[in-house]
Each structure stands twice: as structure tokens, then as C-alpha cells.
Length: 61
Image (cartoon, rainbow, N blue to C red; front, side, top):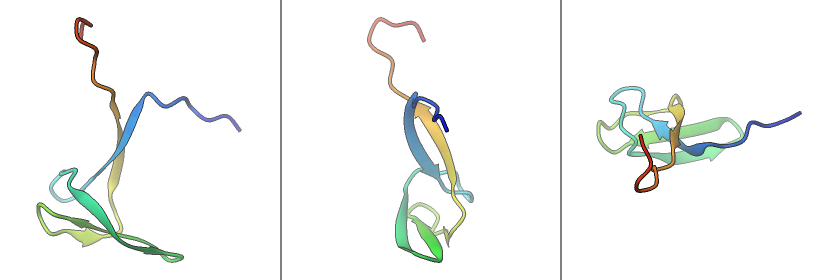
């Protein structure tokens, strides 16, 4: 099985407010629980997306 090459870094986002200020509170065999510092969301559902690396100075974009 081939993996796609990574083009950026992966970021987790809160499903309630969209903030990236989310941290893992607990994780075990049953799953993970996340907490958002911005809106106080607590739950196992988070969105994960890739963010491209910052462009180099002088590059168009």
C-alpha cells in the first residue's frame, strides 16, 4: 500500500468553533477525547486537515 507524500502539516480543528486550539485530554483503547480551549468543546469528534507549508519569500502565492 502506497502512502501519499505529505505536502504540509496536519492540523486538528474544533467542530464547534473551527479553532485550532484543541488538545488531547484522554486517549486509550476506546478512543480519544479532545478539549477546545476557545469554546470549551469536549468530545471525540475533531476535523483534521492539511495546511501547506509557508511559501518561501519571493515565491508567488
